[in-house]
Image 1 (cartoon, helix red, strand yellow):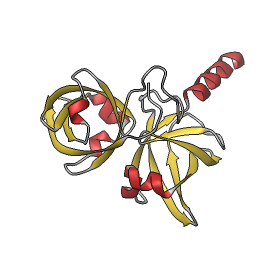
Image 2: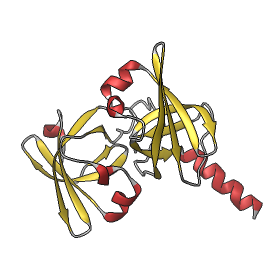
Image 3: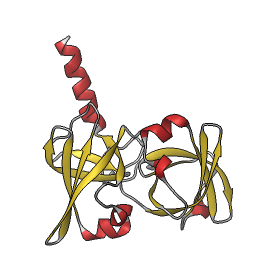
Length: 195
């Protein structure tokens, strides 16, 4: 489990294909603290560390992960948001994030406001957002400001833009979306009641 509070950025060092799998090698400031078999969220996608070599570590993404996330779009030199799993007893500063990306969304607008930036996204998926509800974008726990069918916006403060890969996003950028797990369960229960 994760909280959506990004610890640092990781840089893509190498990408190697093996059958339908892709091995991504990253570098980050705390590689020396990682362990093989540890779960780490990359742009909100929970992946397992399979190798460590100096300041670099490697993860393997299967075809399902590549189809459902934006990881298949990565190139060498790109940066991803990084979060290690939550420790039991630690503060939950964001919201409950599973690291199970639901779909990829598209940034359709970026507006600068005094003190924040508003990012608007669309998605093609059978889930909903709610105003003032939680959404995870590239692993970042955020609050929905505007919610419409298959469209929502979030406001982001300068600190978050600077310390995540939001500073690299442009109109047309693809992002990983994980909808709020509590909302998903509530919706599923309501669907059962309708039946």
